[in-house]
Image 1: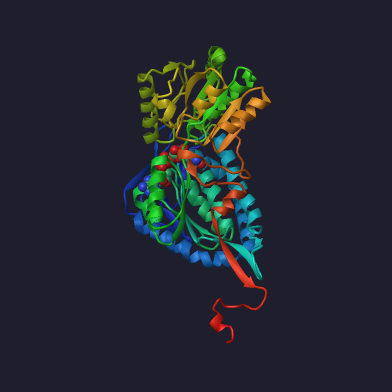
Image 2: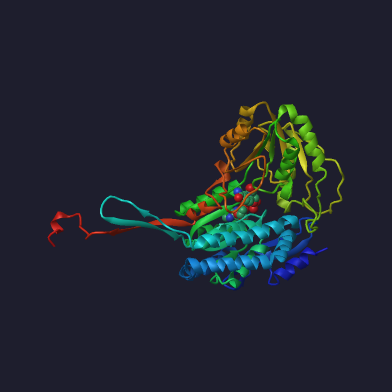
Length: 500
Ligand code: NAD
């Protein structure tokens, strides 16, 4: 079996820190540990690069703005396509590195690396198609718009899908002509550092994709406060997202927020229940529930509740839980000790508030010392139970019943979040009614979790604002400039000047 410490040492012999314009930035701040989530084994330690490291990364990204804009749309497209090729060539190494540090099963990280390459390909395709408009206006004018990039974008990412979330927004921001300073989660900086090296190898100007690693309160805050950062994109929790957006707004800079969710998976009695059970399991247990779109609330029609929940539990026991570096494993551990404690506390709180744990049978041979939470099904969850309202971000399914369509919609919308959701039914009419009525940025009918870079993604309510994929994102990373040209001799508005 692959040894995670060796994987990390081989991928990044210089250690962890920052990377800007061909230079590794080492820090002198707090010591940060990297542990293998499956066993808790300490893989390495490194030091926060602090505010001065963040500033050095912004220096490099700011210096790269001009050459990157001078590369022009076709030059940028070519470089981003080369980056996609290099990611594919490094796919096996990147996936193993991601699994070793984030604990996500190899079968998932392989997909995420392939998606990262796809993001760069997709936005390379857009780079030379970002156009303005010619606008009819009254009078003798040719008026047209151009889409202008911001300059340096500060991009802060979480630990649950480090390379995926980094590539997702960086690809679009770069294609639009911006440069990017990435601040990965302190728990999982490794693959983001490799990405920055590959970007330079692909021919992006040195510094165009810089990385600043460290804690949120040091590196993250310094990045958001830097006057050269003209827009902030944040992917993470609601509380931090609000703090980051407030800090950005305090100096007049916009923020794109991709935050958490508490998405409802609604199952009607008339659904293909066999397929729906698999959909419910995939929605909550993939990635051990550490997914922003996790279907963490199951709302099931009362008349089929007992048989449906029994089947969910029976099949949950079939899922292959184990060492994430084993390519057959489907569910790994929680990614870090902090999150592990949070999940355990929320389950205890839910039980104390009246939820009933339905035990998933089958003893599993899991490594001791790791951050393991077994697939957990909590039934009879009342609307005010903590587990019905709070994002757990773990393999914990909260089950409630509903009586009819109106009740299902009311319960689905009884949340501050609005990221995703799904309905399972054989009625076409009902499917579209429910899809229309549930407040969520992404909604599936008789399916769950499929997303693609070609379609917009983002949240309503506490789940954030702005959109992070599809063509919509081009408006996030550029601003319109209107240019006015008179098509007959210019006449000043002062009559006294007309004779001169
Ligand atoms: P988090 O909010 O703790 O951290 C996110 C990033 O912000 C990290 O890089 C962190 O170091 C940094 N940060 C923390 N405090 C900061 C501060 N004061 N100033 C600047 N930066 C700061 O989130 P997390 O625990 O890493 O990630 C889990 C969350 O991410 C979940 O809520 C999940 O739903 C969300 N998420 C959302 C999406 C989406 O697209 N909507 C995708 C993935 C994850």
